Image 1 (cartoon, rainbow, N blue to C red):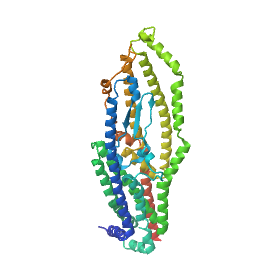
Image 2 (image 1 turned 135 degrees about the vertical axis):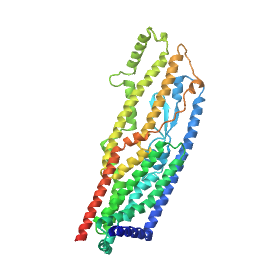
Image 3 (image 1 turned 30 degrees about the horizontal axis):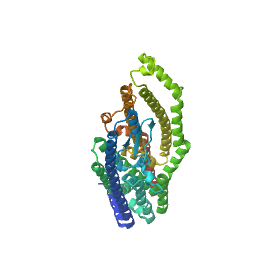
Image 4 (image 1 turned 90 degrees about the horizontal axis):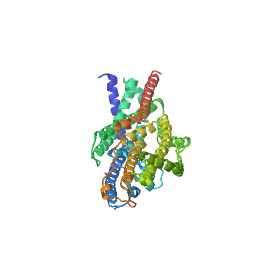
Length: 480
């Protein structure tokens, strides 16, 4: 082993010894570890409780659906059912937008309802700093801990006068910074690796089957969080090298943390809402009802559409009156009205989604200024708790609603011919299986965050560049 490498090894060991001797830093490390343990336990309890509550609620809904008795099929469509969003195992890694999205959707005829019962509505009115989870701890406190530990690793050596002694003893600037960086990485790893392992083990032990998708999600999630902590370490060492006073280094690093973590995401989010304002719920539903009544794209109003339907059916079946039709005209009219309403809701929700997409793109541009935003997007996507996953559940629920309502209307069309008070019974109700949504594939999740991954990678490359610049500055300082 060369003299410079041997010196670097001893320097890294010295830094770890100093951290252990500094009781304040040890207390900070222990507190982060305990906070992470509490986060993991809390997340597991939340996912487990959701699984039990969802199973009980789903069973009760099924019982009510089958026990509704004899009634007109279209009336059964209005009787409707609740469907409940599951929290898959990776959710406990990072709840992200889960609290802001509804946990249940009311599936009824003539209406595409939004998800209701948002957990955030039941929480006290406090400053929202995020839900306690392993992801929140690693993303928020991980870089802060790296900054606190790394602020003085080089600057303090310079202030003590030991930096020149290290360089004079044979440690090259590159080897010195390598030792400082590797030592801090080991220290951060001693805190973060157990957290990641515990979080992964909790995902495996969570309710539900462990699939390859879940394993891949958890592994990728861990890898990106390691990259996130490496990014923080590189910045800490670089700033500590470039700035000569420890107090200034600490001030700069803490200031960067405040800007990147609490301030920038909220500022960019507010800007996105200003540039692309979300329409009010009242306006959204008013526009939907107006298009259902008056039509869109020259489709005609309700009366015009009814006349066109009647004329089309009479021509199709070659009869003169609706009483002569081989199907129930009332059922056909209800079915046509339902399908037109589905078109309106699809159109309205697509326009709303365009607004949300524009807001997300604006937020993503903010990741150029704060890598924390990119890391949040990556974490939520891999945990299955971003808006894309929530929308995937809503789309499946809407498809289920349309399937059931259309089938009920079709039963009315076929069997209510000439029967004024036609009713169906449990035989029809039981023909519909319990709705179980499927998770979004990991491939689709990764596709949605490609740009975020590239942005985070660019930040990592920039951090390595900054460290190389710090190395050159240290070499020039040695020569001077």
